[in-house]
Length: 383
Image: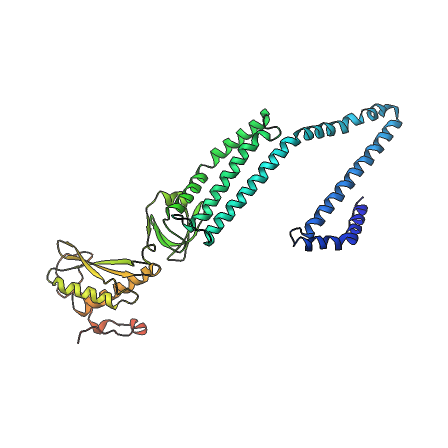
């Protein structure tokens, strides 16, 4: 049988190979030759299987009819073998009208989904513009519309599904629904949170954000989780439900246009004039590379403490991804300036006035091993 099947397929391929390739070329490759060969092989195998079953049935009927003790089995062989198949065929034939209705509903649903896909793809590509509708909303909105179309089509097609009114079918659907409701509570919460975040426009891929105690750059916004890359080059996978229920700080969204404000605080004793302190802080900001000159840095006197005046230096930058490096450079500049002018920083705590001011003289700035990596000296304004 296997030899006959291989021989027949090889003969068909030799004889009709050119014709099938011509069909592919004339349909502009809409119909692939490989798909045609799959259909041909399936048809040939099905016909051979039917023929083999028919031959085996005839052989069994004849053999069983030869012996008296198996003659009754030969008489009822049709009822035992062909009868169930005929009953099944009659059920299928009776269900053909309903299956045609289901087929039409499926085709119509696929057509509507294709139209929706074309529409939202045009919005994503900029071909169609809808006021107050963000381009980033096109894909999630299409997914929602597709789910609604499929659900609506399934609701219409349900009464026409063969056996849908039987108790067994209803029991299976109820059982599946209970399993889904019990096992997908967190799944649905994350999915809903993912869509909610998309329409809230809280952040985009590439933004630096802070969620709770986690800070990092957004690398991927999924339907269930959001991927962050921390400043230590760690991958943070945060469930969307957690993000939805947490406060989000986006360092990037406004930095592109207005700049991100970096700030650091120092406590200086009351014996130092506040005008001198503010001038030194502004000088430290001017020396720090990577900061914006416009808008200009500014100083806030946060409080008059018990032992020191608390100043806050605020500077602008347009690169949130480098904020920690800029903080480091800013702190270095503050330390250098205050050491140059022999002004002691009182923070974080103060107990009593020391015998000597806690400053580092300029000649000791590059003590070993700092000499090996000393940076070029910058103009300080001090002779």
